[in-house]
Image (cartoon, rainbow, N blue to C red; front, side, top):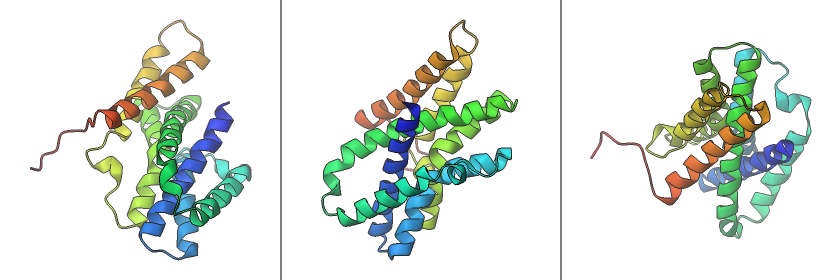
Length: 199
């Protein structure tokens, strides 16, 4: 199930990258690069930092194929893609919930401090978007008011709080991911944002 959600998240991230690249009027090569870094950038950075090489997408070609097919789909159907934005947002949200906990568990498995593990989880979920925005000359969304990385951090805190309780690790995984998803959905629905120092 989690592998399937991982694939769905990759699809959503890749398509979101394509949409940004098209908006920036990039050529085909640029569109494919932006789709790729959006989908796997966070996981790649995480794996490099913890010395897990080759990085995950290099060991499983499914992700490369999924990104390429998703990019072609988004290019061909770009005029109709707006109808899918709600679904893409949902997949993206599920993806960051999953990737946050996956990143945290990778840190836990190699004995890193909980704060570093939460940072790894947040990086896994959101840094593909950061790299995309930097390459597209935009201020990354996680550095603006929108609740995105904050949801990942809250999910990470939940993960370590639940580990102190006598419940199974799978339940800890699921609940922590749900916290990320719920916080993100509520923040968007009710337009909750971090305070800004600018007026």
